[in-house]
Length: 388
Ligand code: CAA
Image 1 (tube, protein in one colour):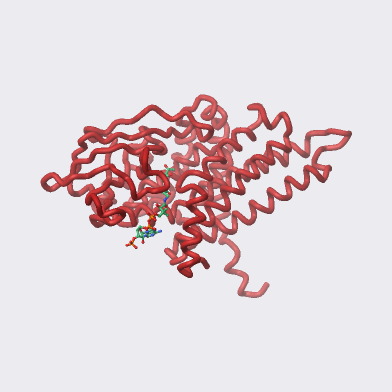
Image 2 (tube, helix red, strand yellow; image 1 turned 90 degrees about the horizontal axis):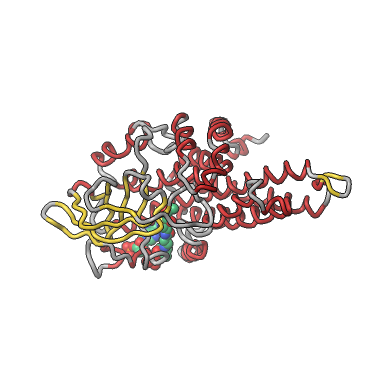
């Protein structure tokens, strides 16, 4: 093999991360996936299984007590957890989303205070950007933080907050300079236990039902000056820089859901007989499986390339994060729909996991920016000459 091709092969440590995560998920996550979905309850047993193997927040650096797994390894963990249970994959994914603003811009004091409990599995971290009237247009938020002596008073409502109520810590984006648009937004750490924080009823959703989504209310929440993350007025840029990295984790989640569906459908097609033969012998079924495998391979290459760029902090991460998230989630929606088709009537029932996977896939086209927003981001990066 020419020496030049060696770097194109993933080092063995990533295969080890995948194998270790798959073992944990087969034993401790997959068995609870159907129940978490059916009862719409947070999968405590899956969280315990992930914690026991240090896979609940793998991105936290070792200096803060974490496993210190890089962006590619973390993507592989999320992919493998999502292959078993998409709801559970939001534990490592949203722990990263919520805490990444601290890692990117937070003071050493904030990092030392809030990251070790997350690494130890004693606390989870969520991310509060969207509002009832500020979804795709995130900069139009109205949650306000008003200066009060040395500190701040926070008032407002955040919506669609993943793991709301389960998480102990929240990165909250709020307007600190009204009228200044994106430049008037700052980021704060808020604790669930802060006076004035409360939660809405969990949303009744199509999928990822084992991960609660709710509104978070801030009613005169007093925050010390030390809760500000980074510089005043830099919150919107921080929110966007965070999403550049974490859209890669949603790509990984979508990839895992798609792989889980392909694995289940491939196994079924080999067993199920019609017209005297396993249905896997028919081209109509083969083509569905082949298309799924092809799209998963392409999505995986793009996602891992984006993860490597996330780890290195490359200048084209905005493009790659958006492209990976958009491509992998569109692929996952198509693949899970087709894999339900492979199972026919059985695929449409809760006796098999395919219908759950199809419902779970849908959200990956919506959260962390709809795929229409991803295409806008991609087009802007193309125009800036930053798309490759
Ligand atoms: N990195 C750094 N800075 C960035 C940036 C990036 N990727 N993207 C934008 N910025 C900066 C810009 O440079 C600009 O600053 P300057 O004026 O100093 O240059 C500032 O931010 C404003 O940027 P734009 O003018 O591009 O902002 P916009 O209002 O046009 O919005 C957008 C851009 C891409 C549409 C953005 O609003 C967006 O991504 N919307 C989608 C929101 C989203 O993804 N929400 C997901 C919520 S999280 C979630 O779903 C979580 C969950 O719980 C699972």
